[in-house]
Length: 94
Image (cartoon, rainbow, N blue to C red; front, side, top):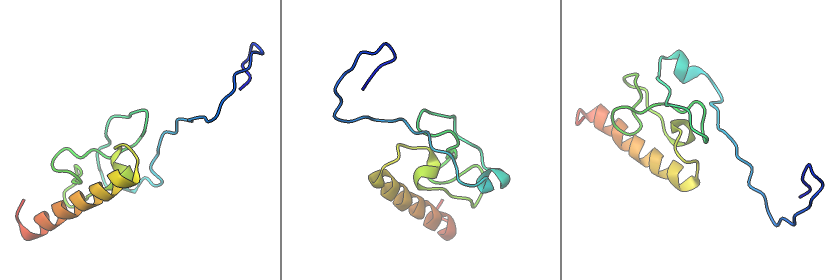
């Protein structure tokens, strides 16, 4: 890496921060509340009740759209938890 003052430093890798944004405004158009912005996500959907359940009854969210740490493991876990919440809602268990 070469800095503005001309000094150099060898670098074997570089992490670049990326803030996630929703690809569509559909959830917001449906009235879903957004979570507070974080360095990882600017427009994650809030899940104020049970995991996966948004502020709009019957609208659920999972994965990167929730604003949690983006990783394959977290997305899989989020999908499983949200599926359980949906089943609970459909069967009247919640």
